[in-house]
Image (tube, rainbow, N blue to C red; front, top):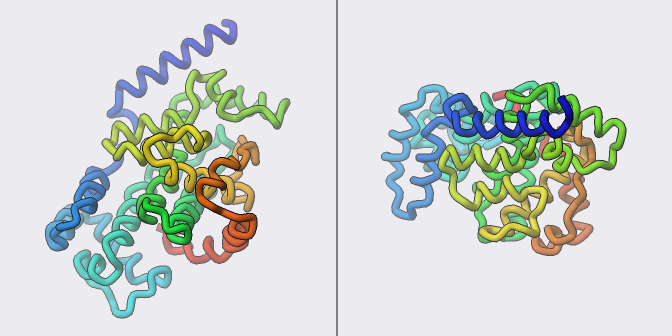
Length: 293
C-alpha cells in the first residue's frame, strides 16, 4: 500500500471516529452546564452549587482543592456553596474543569513521546500562563476562559493517539529525519488532520462556546482567529512559553515558533515574555495540588 492510499484510509477512519462520537473522550455534562450558567450575570449561587453537588467526585475535588495551599482560603471550606462564595465563581469553575479533564488529559501519549504526568503538567502550565496573560494584560476575555482554553488546547492529541498510534510512529520517524519539519503539516500528511483541528471538533461535540473552539483550532495560527483573537493569541503564547521552559516537550520538540502577530496583539514586550518564562518554576510549584488531583 502506497502513502496516498494509507493517508486516505487513515483520514476515513478519523472521519468515522468523529461521527461515532460516543467512542471519543467525553466531558462530564456538569462542565458545559457550568460554563453556560456562569455566563449568566444573575446566576443563583445555590442553584449552581446544587448542580455541582450532583457529581460526588467533582464535589469532593472542589472541597479538597479549595482547602489546599494553592488557594489559601481564609477559613475552612466545607461545601460547594462556601467555595463559590469564598473563592469566587471563576476559581470554582477552574477547579471543576481540572477535575473533569484529568481523566481525559492525564494519559500516556506514547506515540507523542510524552508520558501522562508530562502531558498533564503541560496542560496545567499552559492554562495557568494563559490565565496570567489575560489578567496582566487586562484582556476582555476573562482569565477563567483563558484557563479553560489553555487546559484543553491539546485534547486532539488524545484522540489521534487513541485511534492512530501506528501513523504517529511515521510522524515521529519523519521528525527524527527532519527535525525542522512542520509538525502540523506532518500530521496532516500522514493522517489527513492535525491535532488542533481534531481538538476543536471534540470541543464542538461537547457544545463548548465558539471562541473556545477557535482558540484550540487556531492555537498554532493565531493570526487566523476571527471570533476572539486575544484568547487564541494568549493560548498560543502560553503554549510556546511552556515548551521553551521544557514543560511537556513531545515528539514535536520545540518545533512551534512564537508568532510575532500574537506577541503584538497582546502588547507583550521582551521583558513581559522573560517575566512569564521566569515565573515557570514558581508557577509549577503552585500547581502542585492540581497536578496531584
